[in-house]
Image (cartoon, rainbow, N blue to C red):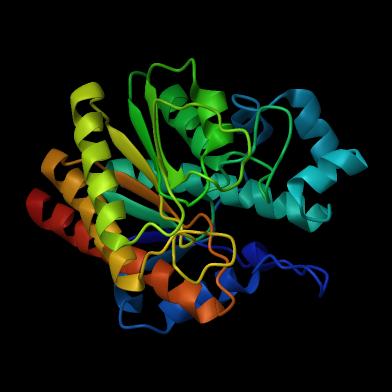
Length: 306
């Protein structure tokens, strides 16, 4: 299975910064040294081009982002200090979701070890998100293969407000976000389907809500590709999550998602999205579970076509 990963994911932030940037490096290293390694092909993604970006983002925003001319207010809204490396990271992360989407369409499943930057809007970044990789990938697929229908399943603990805003008039893209009701962002942007959960929601209630939501999607939208934001932040120990899922519950979440795809022979491009547990190994454990589930689905897909 193709896994898109770059060392650019792990840029250096100021020591006082709370964003767990080392999780990307640790996840890559963990997978490369795991029993899965011989079944994974690690590929350096392309950096998303301006042509790909401006299908989604305002050209003026892209130009100012690249040139370092964002205002102080805009940088505060993003929550990360601007640097050329940060922009390069965002471009590669978006490019990786584009690459994973096309790989999934060919091979059933592929993974971006970053991505899930769902708070980025057309003309501003927000909440650690500069560029909206799911929207960029959706538009890239549609430009290359007109008529494709894309389901963006957002299981990050935060509502995918940027994605919902960007895709609201696109009838070929269906956005489904299941998230914490009282969590960031304060202003939610309505998507095609939103399920808002109360604080401290546990495994059983979460899985029931997710299953019910996917059942509703089944009757509303016939997708050709799923982009799956497999956030680690619904985890009970996450600093920003406010939900109460266990690692086992998150593994079950992945199973529910891939079972849905298996029943429809639906290709899946997976992105890691958020994860802010104090112990980075907890985040890596959860993301590794998702990659393992994606690999199992990929293997089933290959067996089916042989």
